[in-house]
Each structure stands twice: as structure tokens, then as C-alpha cells.
Image (spheres, rainbow, N blue to C red):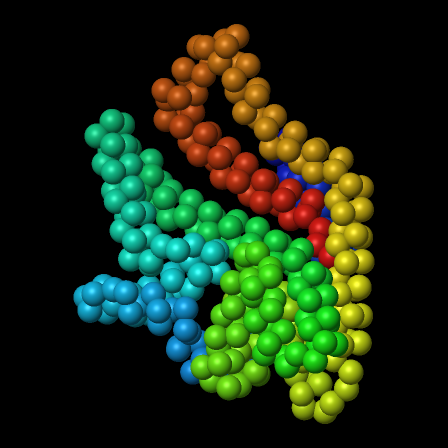
Length: 322
């Protein structure tokens, strides 16, 4: 009993120490993330009719049959379709749902027929939706990072276009023609929205909804302030491009300095699996007892849950955004 109390106190001390290191680093990022989310939600409420009439979405729906179009316009399918659009996928929502559902049923059926374990069957049933969710989120974050990387060059094109006498809409078109995806595609949608609605504010708000980043908000704010109150847009865009480049330079330096912490995180996560493989090779009877008894199965379940929580916690500690 005293040993358990001692281990619980040690675990509590580790958690408190982790929080002491984790909160000061991530608090500014959480503050700016919350501010960005509130701003995007406010702009989305002001321009809800635009979100419902996305040109890209309308074109995709026009290519479907009436039955599939009705399925795609369901509320749940609309959310899935928006996630696919953010991730840069060309799949329809019904295609993703059908594929994930089929894989889930096959895995659950095989698991039940092979092991007759209800918990493992439920896990296999939920695994494909979770994998699809994390895959879409990963693709979205990669696409967002690539967009941020391309943004300074796009701002330079916009600045040169404005200095040459182009209108703002023409500079948007220029960026869509000269920049690769995802920058070129996003600005092509902005240009199409401007031509369709003749409203720069709604078109730029749609861009912020699809690519919610601090850099994008700064660009859109500069454009809106210049259109409403006047000012030198070229100078503001030039300053914004320099700030974004300095931010990326600092981010690369930070990743270099934090490489040791990330490597330590990978070692902590992979060590249990390496130890399990070593024990399996040296003492197979231990592993057989762990896998073949109810107590061992419960230990595996508790250990898996604990490892998942620990991996999530380590990823939050070593991830620093600027």
C-alpha cells in the first residue's frame, strides 16, 4: 500500500513538473489559436451565405446524380466534404464514408470470427474512422504549412503587380497563375469568388475559412483596412512578407535547437515496443502468459491506454509553434 502511494506521488510530481514546463511555452500559442478561432467563427457567421454557396463545392455537386447530390448535401456529409476540401482531397464525402465503413465492417468481422473478443471487435470497428480522421488532419496541417511557406513569394507577386498598376483582383489572378498548389488553387478560388460576387471582403473571408492562419489573417486585415480607410497597401504587404520570412527563419532555428527533445520523445515512445520484442525473443513464455491469460489481457489494455495518453502528452510537450 505504501509503495502504491509513493508511486502515485511520484506520478503526480512528474505531471506537475511537466505542466510547469509545458504551460509557459504553449500559453502564447493557445492564446493566439483561440483568438484566431474566435475571429474565424465571427467572420463565418457574418458571411454564412458564402460558405453555403462555395463555387468549388457547387461545381463538384453539379457533376453528381440527383441521388448522390442529395446525400452530399446532408449536414454530416457537408462537414466531411469541408474536411476533405481543407485536406486538399478530390474525393467526395460519400466515397470516403463508404470506403471507411466497408473497411470497418471487414476488420470487425475478421476480428470476431478469429478471436471472438467483443472489445477487440469494437476497436477494429472504430479504427478506420480514427485513421481517416488523423490522415485528413495530417494532410490539412501539411497543406497549411506549405501554404504558409509559399505566402511570402505570393505577397511579392502581389506587391509587384500593384506597383505595376494592376488592380487587386488582377494581382489575385496573377498569383493563381504563377504559384503552384495549394497557393495557386486557393487564390484561383478567391478570384472566382470576386468575379462571381463582386465582393472582395466575402472572397477573402472564404480564403480565411479554408486556410485559418495568423499570416492569412494579417493579409486579409491589411487588405480590408486599406479598402475601408485607405493607406499604402504595397508597403504593408512588403512588411508582412518580411515578417513571415523572419518567422520561418526563427522556426527553423527553433526546430534545430529542439531536435534533442523530439528525439527523446521518440525514444520514450518506442522503448516499450523494443523491450516487448526483446522479451519475446529471449523469454517467449512470459509473452505467452501475458497474451493468454485474462490478467495479461487487462494489463495490455491498461498499458495501451496509458501509452496512448503518454504519447499524446509527450507530443504536446515537444511541439512548439511560432
